[in-house]
Image 1 (cartoon, helix red, strand yellow):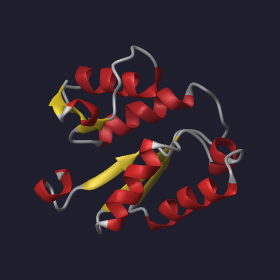
Image 2: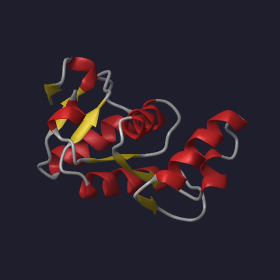
Image 3: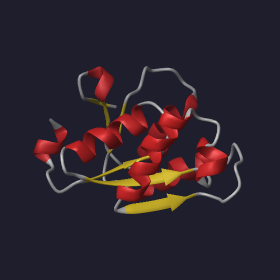
Image 4: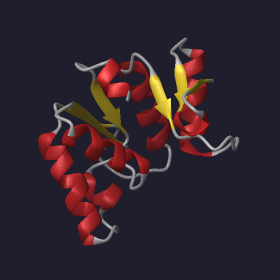
Length: 129
């Protein structure tokens, strides 16, 4: 639905297993460009995932129009760096937000609102936050 309204959009995601990777798959299946923003190099970030999950993200990384990595070595604080960079690179943010005041989605929404970027909640009927 959103892609039809913005056919030339590049879809950025943070590489986390779940909604991030699912959104990347959905965008690629519709012929859209994606950008993958990771908190660290693949081995540190996704190295403990099941092999099939690693394969999906690896394929997206190969097909991405842009790649960005916060820092080479894995550290928890890399997620905040990654989330801030995603917001900087985005024109708008689409979140799958359950309303809880914790986690990376909440943090990214806070960064986006502070930067004056529009935020839409896909779990809330595409309501603007």
